[in-house]
Length: 452
Ligand code: UD1
Ligand code: CA
Image 1 (cartoon, rainbow, N blue to C red):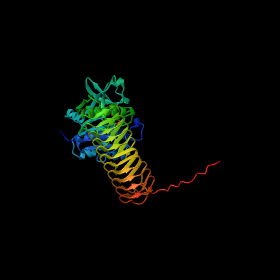
Image 2 (image 1 turned 135 degrees about the vertical axis):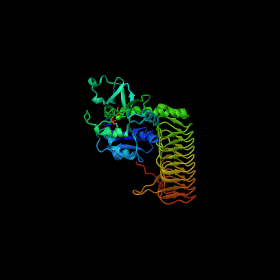
Image 3 (image 1 turned 180 degrees about the horizontal axis):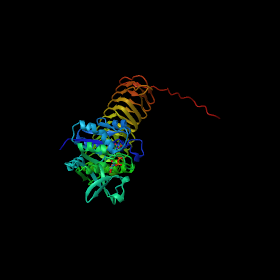
Image 4 (image 1 turned 60 degrees about the vertical axis):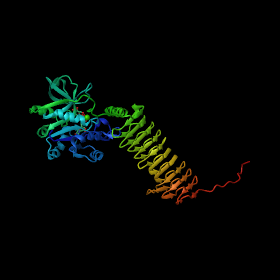
């Protein structure tokens, strides 16, 4: 196959989403649409991929840190967008250019490969879909079975082109580079949008006697474009159900599967158990035998073998060890580590802190920037006061220490092994191994004077 460069069109605003966020960054299962398109193309094209950005370019670039970009300063249409990437493509020595819209998150590498294979030899080829409701897609105009043009919905004139077809342009193309170089300068903006349409390349190529092929890719939903909130919801639901079906096939136990949302990049091992509604996303690993109860959110975290995440827990950037227990109603923030069999119970928040093996913080506690030794017991209402208004400080708690309820540990501070802190203490000085510390107002009892 000749060397092919890929271009992703991602400069548009996405007016129909009614959102300030660029359309290609709208999320499908917690991941921007554009990241899916990239992931599909990378195995096919390696790093010979340019993404055309324009509207909110900085934000779009930040979402794809390793990608290459071309810049479209003004969004003058999809044809104009391709032109912006041409110099790079010419410089890379490719003979063909593959172009795809950035709003097709269900695209797969297999669909792209299949399309390229079937497009071999054509000067220009584009993917088509057969849709019951062609909505705003570009219509494929044929005469006597032969392609004549692609005409946008708003420019479609039934008197000129005949009854509207159900065959539409899917927004995926491949051109011979020389043909593209020759034809792109001839695009005009004489249409109802005043834009330079990539789709006009079809009629231009035919007029030049080039070979043009429309390739039906209508077998599944891979090429559905997302332009509206309704289309976003539809595509997300399709992907969600595909991922859950795959998990079930692999031996993951899923309760209320219609309510389970797992992003495709997350890994759930066979024998793990998920109860909907729940959301698992990012770079997450749920190991075998782990259980995620209903109403939990887990992102960029590792949940170890046989660990139990009880309802309404929110976990992000955390590591939960074997047979550890979290929740209900717990919050693990980035840097939280629960070693094997540790517990973080209801209304416990853990941030950048480690609970050693078997350590327990079961109720109403904040552990931030802390190291808690194995077997320590953190009483209800314990707070590590880690922030002095300017800087964060660390709290260290030794193995098997016992922190009485309603204790404030004013960091930096360290509590020794086997130390005991009396309930209600405000600890500002280090406590050594085995010491008992009580730091609170002394109780005074006196006779009560009752009114007559
Ligand atoms: C486009 C096609 C239509 C096709 C449909 C398939 C054109 C003129 N029409 O319509 O035939 O059926 O896709 O989904 O191409 N973009 C830029 N710069 C611009 C304008 C758009 O980079 O100046 C990008 C957008 O960010 C988007 C993609 O191009 O990712 C397609 O633009 P969009 O407005 O979604 O085109 P459609 O109206 O869907
Ligand atoms: Ca679109």
